[in-house]
Structure formats: structure tokens, C-alpha cells
Length: 216
Image 1: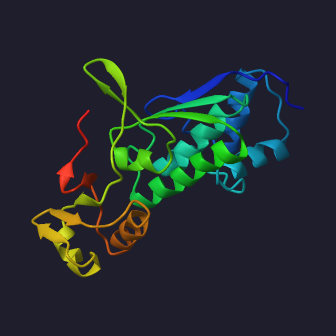
Image 2: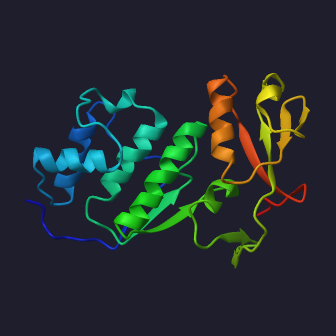
């Protein structure tokens, strides 16, 4: 039985701190014991399923993708049912599909678990889709960010020119850079198609009226 020891804050700073030689279930069990929580095997399975991980996988976490490690880190951070979850650059190192899966998980946590998220990231495009409020740190001050929704994105990839047939009509391609006119809702589908075609996007920069507004 789990002890009722809720904590106000949970978080992952930079990368999840996991034991790579242990399985996902063993990581959850160990971190639970560190926090004075006793979990049954079924409860551990539920924790993994909640973040989209299979409890049937028994191999070491070092074999997991970065996206799976982020999910496991979130499961550990949620063990004591925090009211606030702090995530520092959670999208770093993830491919486009991993990013979209993580976004869905974070939105699920806020809607179904009532968790408040505080997310820091240098990639504003990701924050637009999961945030109710957006702030910038400028000149050592925290300022509310107000801007129009992006009307397009600059995509950077080594072989982006090979994907010209997959890009929306009117896209401009120059060497390793492509400027595409798509909305934030349309972007995940485009990134998925590019990934399937072997185009690995290194940067995705939102644009408003053809101007880069990512200063910060």
C-alpha cells in the first residue's frame, strides 16, 4: 500500500536520473522506497502504463530511447503525487515523434491528474501547444510573452532539399533550410512525414510574418 505522503513539487532537471542497469519497474520500485512508498507489482505496472511504457519490458533502462527515459523520469517524479511538475528542456534529444508523444503525455497529466506544469525550453514552438501562459527571461527579468501564433516554420536538416515533394506548396528551400507555411496544428503531421522519409530535422524555428521571433 502506498503511503499518503504527497509532495508539492516534482521535477526533472536536464535529464532523468535513472539507474541504467535496472529495468523500468526496478527503477520505479527503488525510487519509491527512497521516498518511503511501498508499491505492489500491480501498482508499479500502473505507474509505467500511465506514462505510456510497457510493464512487460524487463531489459535494462540503458537500452531505452531518450523519449522512453523521459517518460520513466516523469513516472518517478510523479510518485508522490506532486501538485507542480518542473521540467527543464524535456524535448532535448528527442526526435519529432518522441516530441509529439511527450507533448501528449504532458497534456494528459494536466487534464487527468490536475498537475500544474512548469516547463523551460529554448524551442517556443513546442511550448505553444502545451502552455496556457508563456514567459521569457530577458535581461535577467521574467516577462510575459505575447505574440501572434506562428504562420510558418523554418526547418533545418542536412538533407531537407531531398524532401521538396513532401513540403507544402510555396515552401522555399535553400541548402539545409526550408521555410514552410504551416500552422502549429499542421506541423506534427509534416514532421512525421519527413521523419518517415529519412529527413531528421535538427531545428524547427517558428515564424510570424516571415520574421523570426525566438529572441529571448
